[in-house]
Image (cartoon, rainbow, N blue to C red; front, side):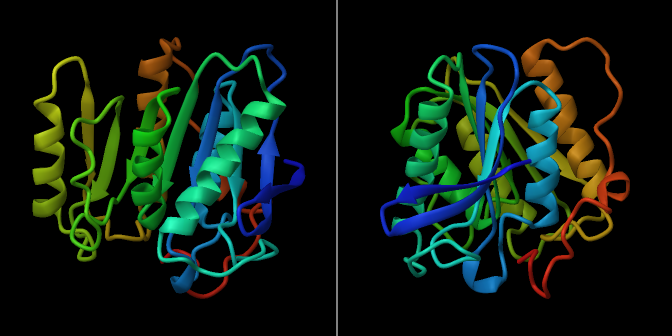
Length: 238
């Protein structure tokens, strides 16, 4: 899990990059929650999704948006962060020019940024959108959604209520040629407190279906990784 620094539109961006050994391995970019509410690339959900991709043969990058950690710049209300995500994908493609596919994944604010990047980059063929805040941000740009993917949210989410998120997903499901899957984690709030393991299990199972992987051991749980995970700061899951 080497540290990396790459150039972004507002200066240097800090990340962690796993470079897959297999030639032509797919790329995945994982985006963190809202920077002004403590979101960083070390958020536990971002961290676990990073490893879910890595364990399935992806070259995967997670990074801090501008103004977070050692990333230069300052918060730009989404526009600049979208440019950061595009720069991250550009960098990953430079490191892995033979990658056969690209995926995008994001949590909350990161899900909103990720879906916008999906609309702008036709090489992205799959997505995972965790707790997309459909009541806080406009997702009408997904018309139509160009790639198949997975939405996951908790049935106790008060930030992104189930009714609004479900309405968005049902609209996307009507598009021909696109398969949208939807998983609900029972008892989970917006931050998936005490529900990270079932969330990551859903993500892993979806990836295995899309990748046609044979039955495999479950993705290691958050508890099994806790020694390697930096302790999040207060609010890091926002």
